[in-house]
Length: 304
Image 1 (cartoon, one colour):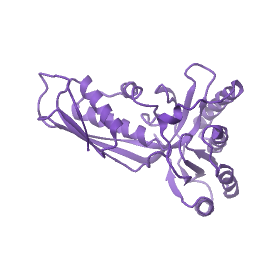
Image 2 (cartoon, rainbow, N blue to C red; image 1 turned 120 degrees about the horizontal axis):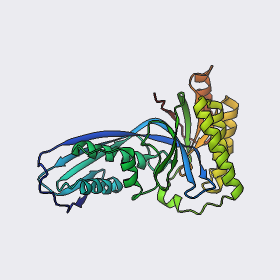
Image 3 (tube, rainbow, N blue to C red; image 1 turned 180 degrees about the horizontal axis):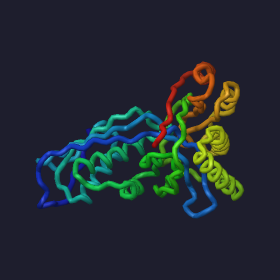
Image 4 (cartoon, helix red, strand yellow; image 1 turned 120 degrees about the vertical axis):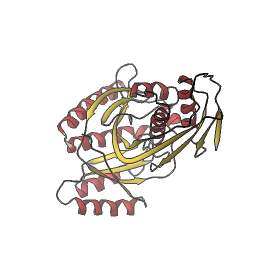
């Protein structure tokens, strides 16, 4: 267990225990990620999935020590300390995080941990924690996915700023493979991006196209944009199986291929309402198993 000492005084804090619990969903990579031809041009478009991080924070009024479990969740511990300091609370607390999101794969596990933590600590302290306040904290910690918002969003992940809420999509299945290893988000975002002016104009066109596709709930167009983005990202994070997975997608009648641009995962998008969905799912899973050797099926989230 990792600990951190808090030093902010607060004479009027009521020394009574309180507990807050909250959750945040993850994303399967990004439908689109690149750089626009403008200042602060780095952006992504989220694909929310039905996997979550859950945080529980219990105030311990008779100590000034903050603890976190699992112990390696040091970023969440740092965020907790920041919120406690701003709320002028001198008590300690225990933060516990549970997650069904694998780490280092491009599924926004760290972002989900931090958003769930911010909300859980705020619930325990009875502090307001609107999305913009969470963004201001996370901008001081690391690049972040837009999991604060119950929608598909365009998000400036390096400056941690919402660009636009695009809407919601019908449910899709993601037949996923993992090429192995792990990627550190901070390290990845430090890599120079060799995108040309023409590439940046193309990303602007793709962003406009996917915004219209989400508004129309056009899954085929969404899948096409995701596949283009996956191919354009090869210069940054090459995935050896991408073209083969795109071939499998085409063979089974999938919508397109989505990747963790800063991760190790690739996924075939399937419309769960389409005719023959279950047979397509089985065929895609079998072919991916033969190609890479491991398969996980995720479901995307729809919002009302």
